[in-house]
Length: 229
Image 1: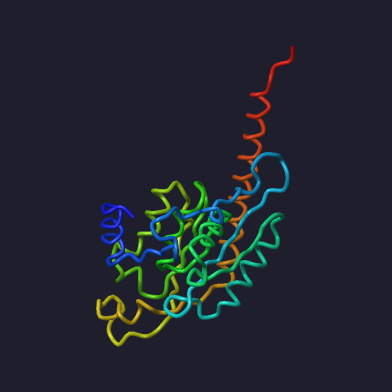
Image 2: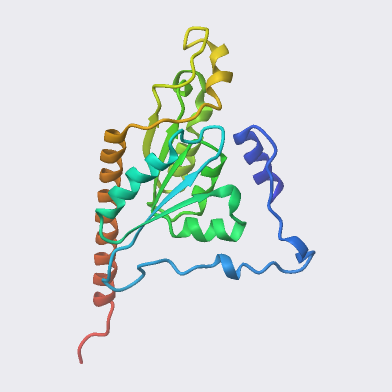
């Protein structure tokens, strides 16, 4: 990582940046063969595949009832032909595995956290759905919007954020800055009805976009073909 990029990342995330290395590669060339993947649904008018990835956390800012949240998105994904759901944990993936997973992701569902930095590995026009524990909106400051900004800068669509209205109690007024240490690492609940509607809307938007892109691509291929002699 170049010095200026490292400085930018440290300033953005408020701490040191950990770089995953390539083991015994030494000073030689590191092969990215496993990280280079073929994007699905390129060319042709076949099935429109939608990659829905749930990038989960353990501990702080994880879902209190993970299986229930996964179940909601699994049901909505199952209603869309071509939707493929993947549930993963970034701390269990190598760098190459993260690159491959993100390259196949059209919709990223994830709690607020460092794992969302991986959005820069996603394709342009991909979508991000973000989740926060109680208390962040009032007390976390502008830093809570960093992944919204990253998505926008990268040409992706941040589809909004769900903020849990429930969580750990604070002995002070909820807008008191002394509550933030309590809320910072809180866990996230779920709203069945809201999550279903949100997932359904985002899935339909992505499906429509991908179908239009495939149609436009095939139209361009036809128009660029050789003229009849």
